[in-house]
Every structure is written in C-alpha cells, then in structure tokens.
Length: 193
Image 1 (cartoon, rainbow, N blue to C red):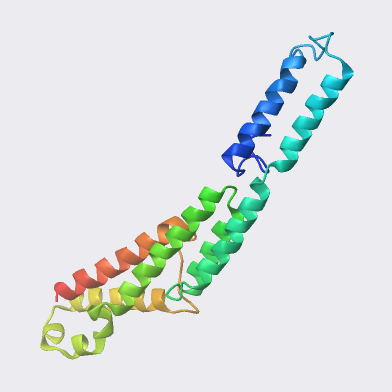
Image 2 (tube, rainbow, N blue to C red):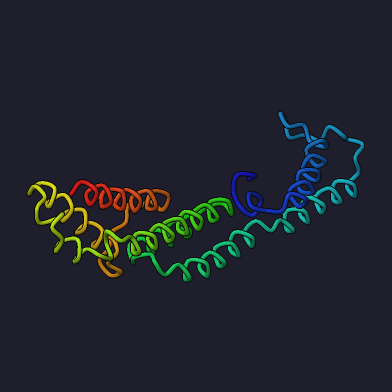
C-alpha cells in the first residue's frame, strides 16, 4: 500500500527501488487474470523477482522515519516554554496523530508560532503595565464601555497566559492566530481609552 507506511514516509530512493521491483513482478503477471503471461519465465526468475520485491519492501524506512520525526518533535515541543498546558496538549496530540513526516513538521512549526506569539503577548505593555493603565487618568476618565472592553480583553489575555488553566483552540494550526487576536483586542482596547 503506497498510501501508508512503511512506504508513505520512506526515502525516495527506497520508494523508487520498491516501485521498480513491483513493476518487474507485475510485468510477469497479467493483472486481469493473475496468470503468468511469461509462461517461459522459469521458476528461478519468478523467485528472483519475488525476492527483489520482498527485499525492496523490507528496506522501506517510512515507519522508522515517522517514528524518528515524532521523537524529535517531542524534544522540540519540550523547549516551547511559553505555551500553556492546553496548547502543549494540542500540539502533542497533533504530533501523535500525524500520518506523515510533513504533518509532524507542520504541527511543530505551528506550535513554535504559538510559542512566539505567547511570548510576545506576555511582553505586551498593555498587559505588563495593566495596573498603571488602570490607575491612569486615561483609564479612569474613559467611558465605562471602554473601561469594560479593556478589562475584558485583559482578562482574556490573563486566562490565555495562565500556564495551568489557559485555553487552546484544540487545533494546533489555529492557536497562534487565537493568541494574536487576543493581543490585537487588548491593544485596540487600550488605544480606545
């Protein structure tokens, strides 16, 4: 099956060798009847074709490559210290469920983007200086709806940045955007004061 491992994630040279061995074996068999079309093909030739196909199939390393990618991904994810626990679980789940090396790479890259956005959010002055902002005349003189918008956005950011109780979208590829949206909401609410 070329849509699953060990073929799917195998090195291209190994896939090519398997494909060539399979084609050689297929050429000896009539696909419609399964009968030998090369009645003159002796049993030694057929045995050689079978051995070549078995050897090529055994050499496919897709399962190993996927397993190695997942192991490396676990190491990469462990270094993403800005993620909250829910985001980390989402990233780990995406890696665990990945069927291809490319899917593993995409999950890790998405988690890295979320990690970067979480770091940027944690350093945002509208978050780090929230107490000063709330004590400022700009805040105290603002309309109540603008104060509420800032407080709500700040609460959303605090919840997101909470390591233990922070949230995730549940999809590793959308977490980074959710963090960016929370930061934009906070920044816009602060500007509107």
